[in-house]
Every structure is written in structure tokens, then in C-alpha cells.
Length: 129
Image (cartoon, rainbow, N blue to C red):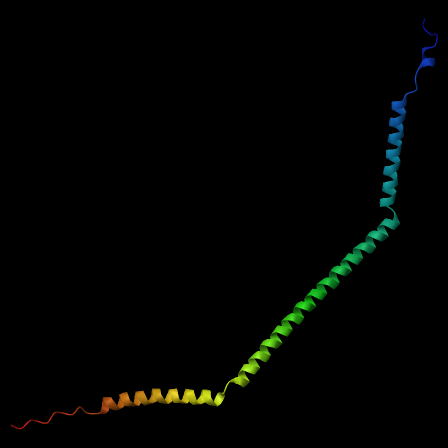
């Protein structure tokens, strides 16, 4: 027996309804995301975060530059102090005396060489038999 009205015994289309519900939910989520992205709240937060990051970066750069400058200044000061201490430690009187003695020795050698050039060679006296 065939029923007189075949559509009366049909099952509801569950798959189609689920697809429609999922599609509607996806569209609603997309619309909500688009509205959230374009919202003033998101723009303010993004702007605030960007300014905060820029500020932190600028402060960090300045702090690093200051630290490097301080370190270089400190090293230069230490080197200068070490050089001053070394200059004070040197016995300049002794250094001058050593230099003068060395110079006089050199001059004495040159004068001796010059004297040898001007000294006549002695001839041997003739021998008497």
C-alpha cells in the first residue's frame, strides 16, 4: 500500500537545517569580528599599546646610551688617573741623568774619533847600527 500523500511521512531535513544554522552562526561571528575590528575601543587600545611600546623603546634606548656613555667616561677617567700616577712614580731626575750620561758618552766617542783623524801618525825613528 502506498500512502496517498507521500510528503506526509517524510523526515525533516536535519542536515540542511544544521548547515543553515552553521552558516548563519559563521556570518554572525564574521559580522561581530568586523564590528569589533572597526570599533573605536579597538582603535584606542591599539593606539595606546603602540604609544606605550614606542615609549618603552625610546626609554630603553636612552638608558642604554647613557650606560654606554657612563662606562666610557669611567674607563677614560681610570686611564687618565693611571697615567697621572705613572707620571708621578717616574723619577724624572734619574731619567734626565741617564739621558745626559748616555748623550755625553756618545759625544765623547765622536770627539775621540775626530781626534784620531787629526792626530798625525808617528813615523818610526831610523835605527842606528
